[in-house]
Image (cartoon, rainbow, N blue to C red; front, side, top):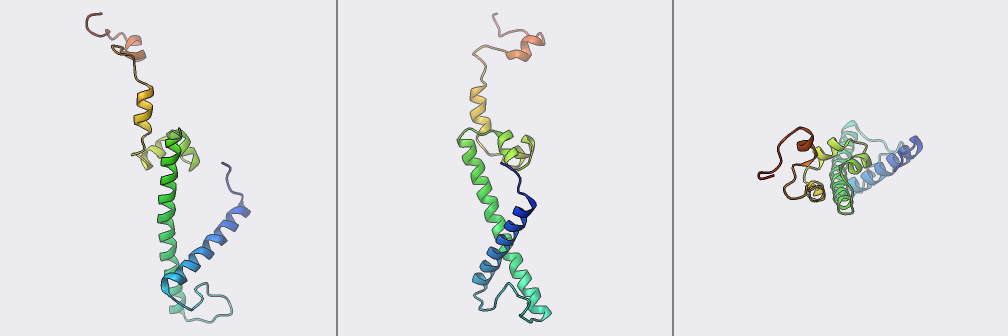
Amino acid sequence: MRELTSDEQQELRRELAAVAADWTQRLNNSDVDIRGGAAQESSSKERMLRHLARMAAGEQMRRLLTDLVSASAEEAVRYGAGYPEVGAAVGASRQAARKRWPGLSISKRRASEWRQPPGSIGWAGSHLGYPGPPGT
């Protein structure tokens, strides 16, 4: 996936601000326009409360988006993605993805794919001079 351009970032920021303002108004059951247009005169206290309410709605949105991203990571893994792909999708390294989502079933699935044949000591053992299994 490509990165957003600066114009796209600004557009998304405006859309998210509008969603946050709408939800702030819903959660406060307020008839007052929480967006606080220039024509609306308000006291410093009203402005402060408006911004605090917007912060609270934004924080709830952040938590929901975090859950959405985690659910998408789980689905991507279900369809074959590994930590490198999951990390790249969020602009992070494989290690960072593994730290962020340690419970993904990637390691179990991939471990079963990488199993050595019975009695094998693997590449490292044979190249480092370790003896094979007993009786060989």
